[in-house]
Image (cartoon, rainbow, N blue to C red):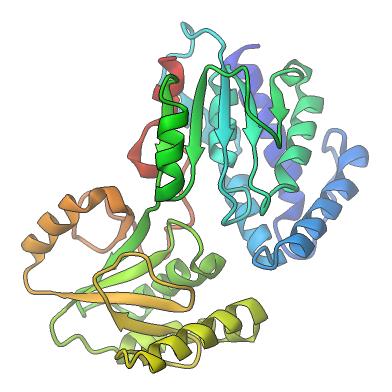
Length: 352
């Protein structure tokens, strides 16, 4: 199968997914195999919602929209044009996926297949409905994918390399278990925002998207702010207010109430607005409904501090701070070439 065939297949998959780009699904004409798959995928979305309370329809649709934008001929060609796919030999690559947000392991999945390899997937039990169905669609639009995609719930066997995503604790297990295989092992990371106090209301409102999307469960969600001394929080809280309906969602509200009670009983100082708490803390990972913050004295010193902590950080949201910064509101809209942990997955796969 040629690279052109693979790009064409993923482009057709993107066209299929485009029918689910809003909460009012709309069936399109001229979608291959639509009669066979359209109602089935609607059902899988429903199952995903019922099985995992964090996977609301809104968040599933948001995740699908990201892939609709990426799975186009232009984007796929732009992504793959930087690599040489002609010399690699097909290997069987295992992927151990996380399940914190919908289709979180999909980038690894398409990276393996676009590179010409076969894929063996072990999904998280929290996110097990969407990907197998999309894989079946992919096999129908490009029959040469049949036999190259498999899923397992048991022990992973007969693979040549592995991409595993988990916590920092599970990473130690992965590193030991897969020590004899080429691997990418991902640990806990969090995203941060560096503010100056001069941000516009629009920029701070965009930041609210980075904080609240997926309830803050993604590694690309902003969980910590770095602020100048004497920062005035009024503009920040005003900009966050557009997300106030989130407190009406029971799982989020339960976490908010629990964490607030812990802070109060522990006599921790914090600020809150009825649906978000902010607390001064040196940690990068904050609980749901909480954002940590830390003050900085000098912007250049902060750059050095963050450089030293780079292995803990997924994204840095800022304006005119560093070259690799992410724009406000864009953390959950990565491009195909925005690799997790800044590890180029395609280069890894082509060097197997």
